[in-house]
Amino acid sequence: MMGVSRLWVLVNLFVSGVVGGVGDYFYRSVLMFVLVCFLLLRIPYIFGLSGFLLFLVSFMFPLFLSLMFFRLDDSIRSFFSGFVPIGTPLWIAPFVCLAETMSYLVRPFVLLMRPFLNLSMGAMGGASLGFMVLKFGSGVVFFLVILFFYEVFVALVHWFMVCNILSFSVDH
Image (cartoon, rainbow, N blue to C red):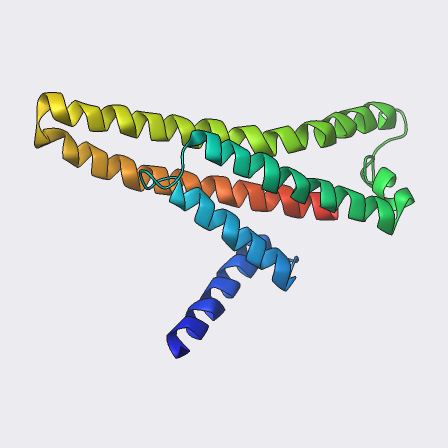
C-alpha cells in the first residue's frame, strides 16, 4: 500500500510539472487517464483504432467543451477579450481577433485528429512490420522493438501536446 501512495505522489509531481499552473486533483487524474489510454494503444489487442477514436470523441471533446463553457460562465468579457492579446496595435486587432477565433474553433479538432492520425499510423506500421516477421523471419523483431519504443515516445509527445492545448484553453 505504501508503494502505491509513493507512486501516486510521483505521478502527481510529474503531471503537475507538465501541466504547470493547473493543479486541480481531478484535472491531473483525467490527464493521467489520457496518458494511460495513449500508452495502451501501443500494446496489441488492448483496443483498436475505432475504440481509440471513440475514446477521443467521447472523452477529449467534452473535456475541451467543459473548459470552454466554464470560461464562458466564469466571465464572458474575459473570454472574448482573450482573443486580442495585450499589446496588440489597434490597426491589426481585428485581424488578430479573427485569427485567434479561427484558432479557437480549430483547436478541438486538432485535439482529436492529431493523436488519432499519428498514433493509428504508428499502430498500422507496427502491424505491417509484424506481418513481415512471417515472411522474413526473426530479423525484423529488432525493428519491432525499436518501433515500439518510438511509438511510446510519440504517445508521450501527443499526451504532452494534449495537456498543453487543454491548459492553454484554460488560460486563453
